[in-house]
Amino acid sequence: MAIIEVRDLGKRYGPRVAVDSVSFEVAEGEIFGILGPNGAGKTTTVECVSGLRTPDRGSVSVLGQAPADVRAAIGVQLQASELPERMRVGEALSLFSSFYPAPADWSARLGLSGHLKAEFGQLSGGLKQRLSIALALVGSPRVAILDELTTGLDPQARRDTWSVIEDVRAAGVTILLVTHFMEEAERLCDRVAVFRDGRIAAADTPSGLVSRVDGSCRVRFVPSAALDVAVLEALPEVSSVSVVGEQVVVSGSENLLHAVTSLLARKQIVARQLRVDQVSLNDAYVRLTGGSSDVADH
Amino acid sequence: MLRIIEIEARLFVRDRLNSLFSLVFPSLLLLGLGAIPALRTPDPQFGGLRFIDSYVSSVVVFTLVFIGIQRVPAVVATYREKGVLRRLATTPMHPARLLVGQLVVNFAAAILSVLLTIVVAYVVFDVDLPHHPLGLACAVLLGGAGTLALGLVIAALAPNARAAGGWATVVFMLLMFVGGVYLPRFMLPSVVVKIGSYSPPGVEALQQAWLGTAPDWRHLAIMGLVSLVAGTVAARTFRWE
Image (cartoon, rainbow over all chains, first blue to last red; front, side, top):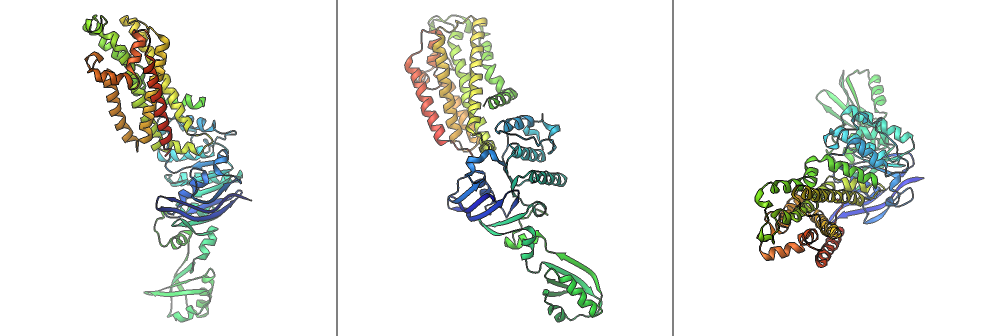
């Protein structure tokens, strides 16, 4: 059963179209990732799903109802939303937990226990982010919407946060995750939608997206003896061959390596400096978003 | 809701400088001026009253204008700019409650501050206790409401917290001037005195209730009207983000 259902969503700000006909469904217990460059409509889409914005067109339902009617069941972590400077971490947690019928305390799990008396204005970026996640989960939500979950966290804190999210999912929570980090999407998401210009360019499992890319595998080597490029090109697994200096670069499908090495063995040629590159989700993302370089790192 | 008020109250007190200014400064101002002997001498210009007697109502004006115009719009505009209101909009609690909490706490502070001024004026300078306590209560409540509502209009219309601060300072200065805080009212041109009677928080009604017999109901009605109109404008034009 679909917990989140978005149908033909459209939203514009004045003349600018932010989201233009977006549809997707998220099943119960799933982690659904939203990727895409800045301005692709990611945040507007999750704001509509959170009930913060009213769509101009199309429909959004969460747990079968309008998002604004099920706020208590949705936990939201927003980009760039702060708390009063002098509010303490403990006060924020107790204030937010007073809004919900069955609050849950994630502060220890998120490493906030030692900072309960610290004021929001004095927290580091990473602690602010962790507090923001704790507040999103404080109401024991059935759906968690996390916009840029680990932006601003150091690599260790990022990995810790991922394991928190895995625990949250294990508790049966459905998660909508906006991210810039391909590693995060690969690790956490069951399915991913890549946004581009207010539309979904592709939606699939992370490995499904990777396999859509032509030449998803690449083998590079220096042959020990002269090699006829045409023989390589004749292999069904090979999509292209190029020669750079003495190095031969072969691109093709997943079984490329086996096909190339068997050919070389038959010809009694040794492949020196053999390298195999698998196309990553990052490469697939760059192709799908038209070569946008808006990927922070991976 | 109680939890919100409690936390807003803590935040209010934690902001030392501003809470000191709201609660204690008005009484200190009175003490400072009262320390000058000439201002404690009866003067025929005030109809035999002392300067200090006629100035107590202007001290109340300072309190209400400081809280309503300087304090509240700054906090509200900052809450909006920092996304605090937006963050609350995703929870089952409407962000309007945060603003209500903010108003309750500031109103309570204003009342405490006025009570302190009354006590200081009475104990230290032997100024009469308010002649018409009910009238003074009405004048403070309606005047405070009108000032807060005006402050909320600033918060609603200002594009950001900086602009809100700038606009608020201008309005603050003007209201202090017509309310007789800078110069005693007898030194002001009669037209300014007139304006002061009708602009929030309504110094004339405060004065009348404290030292005269009863506040003029027209002055109170005007304050009620200002609260209503400004409150409606603020509510209509308020942006949550």
